[in-house]
Amino acid sequence: MSNFVQNRIQDISATISVLLNIILIFLILTKSPKKLGSYKYLMLYISLFEILYSILDVVVSPVIISKGSACLVISYIKNSMLSQTINIVLHTSYCGSFGTSMGIFALHFIYRYLTATGSKYISTFESWKMICWMLIPITYGIIWGLIGYTFIGPNAYTNDFMKNDIEYVFGWDIRDTIYIGPHFYKTDSLNFTWIDKNAFIAAGGMCIILLSSIITILYFGVKCYKSINNMVKDRVSTSSSNFKNVQTQLFYALVIQTIIPVLFLHIPVSVIFICTFLELNIGLFGGIVTISIALFPAIDPLPTMFIIKIYRDAIIGYVRSFLHYTKIFPNKNCAIQSISNHPKDISTPNS
Image: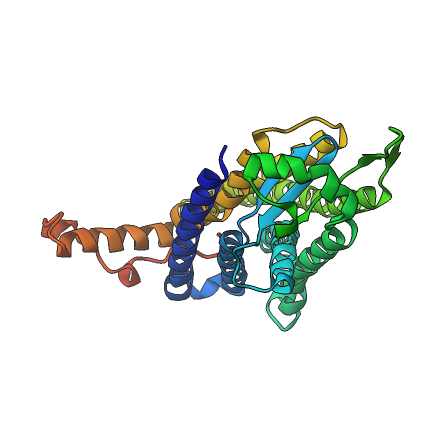
């Protein structure tokens, strides 16, 4: 897949991501019921991160290239108006943002579980302590970025090993690039192969972050699902139908928001690590992963926007009003009531 095609897809994905997340931020600020509580700020935090992530993706324009036991996330900076130092910071921040996203997923599911079970610890999200919770993903990102730049950043051996392939595939001089990526096994002029300990240290640290996110999502996701099921079973009266609807919305949003990062982030990155470790050339898969990572922030807002009823109704209302006032759909009956008059059927945080 050509670099031009990848960049255009990244640009389009970033534009969609910024637009959708701005719309979601507007809905969160204007349509969220008061009972949503501090979860509103967590959703805003996630949306703002995804906007920043998308902007970084466009500015850095990373691509993935592999050869043998080396796999690099690389950016071309020759035509950049920014200094090399700033480009290094941006590239490292982009790589670190993947670690931040891992922390955000974990935090998201921890909050969901505490809310569903009515845990006393949910109060820690309703005070200044929420800042401490939000610092966890940022810490994940800083650690990921520092590990990458310190242990698997540019070095003379990898430059010599990859320069011909980079020039052949992209037409770039490696001196005009910035990259981060492991090179597990190295060979000298006598064909003696040794293990690069820095690559294994970096891979170990990143795998710990990745696995901690996956384990947290699975553990709290399953416990949250069981808790919701138990609560719904306990409320069998007809008056609890609204409660059941709310919990169903929460469950579907939870499931989809688990599938999205697993499919677009966890699995692709895990496959790259495994293939590189086993010296399996990923070929076109590197381009697919680059696009997959870029698509994630453009898709992630959709479950919240369309599964959560109060947000979905607001979007439908705005679309119908737009069609009515632009005479595309002039039937006056299609204009629905203002969402502010719509009964608020959300009694618990449920994005």
